[in-house]
Length: 265
Image (cartoon, rainbow, N blue to C red; front, top):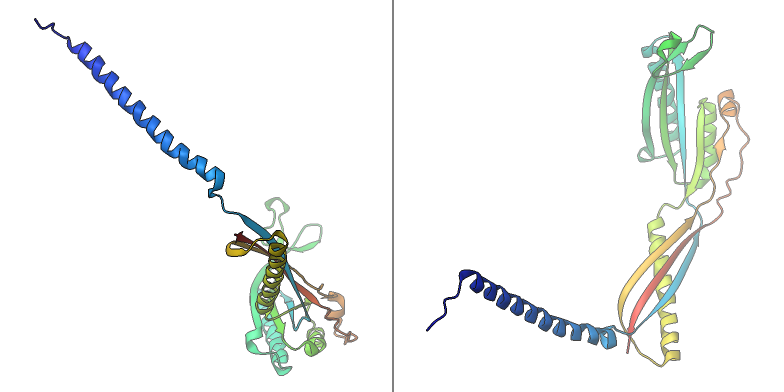
């Protein structure tokens, strides 16, 4: 005689069987991966050594850069722009005659700003004057800013005299630098790697191990730049020839620091 089993009891048995199967599967996976993890902790991690190396190269700056701004003020925009354009074109022509290549003379930006006069009589140049001040436009100032690269350090003084003679108002420079600094960085890195390899070989011999493959590499570096000089605006505006100063280029140090990790056996 069969005892009837309700549907609810059947569902309970199915649920229990499924739960037991899941538990058994999880236990099996834990055993497998636990063994692998245990094996990794006890020998899978490779033996390595890490060494550092440093490479330095000192070089003399071979190029200089100026930033100059030419300004002219007039009653109307057109006159101010024409006056500043004529002045900056004259500066560019003089630079080319001095041997500065056209590719090394670049217009960075130009602008024309209104010049305002306030009720107090004080004049200021503003793009957006305060509404409450009720300013009156009394003129316009047009300016051109050039960047000039001088590849011959011996011509730096000549270029400064051109700016002074042309009454350039704002002069920043010369900013001395190395033209092919990327090539020097490569050379410094090569020295740093050679230094690290030499240290690795000594360390391996002291430890009684052999060097294997490189498993990681990193690099950092720094560059020490010489200071740049700025010309005084009042000297440039006076139109008088400023005394020539010797350009002390100094040295720039390019440094590479590397870290190399080797497998050992």
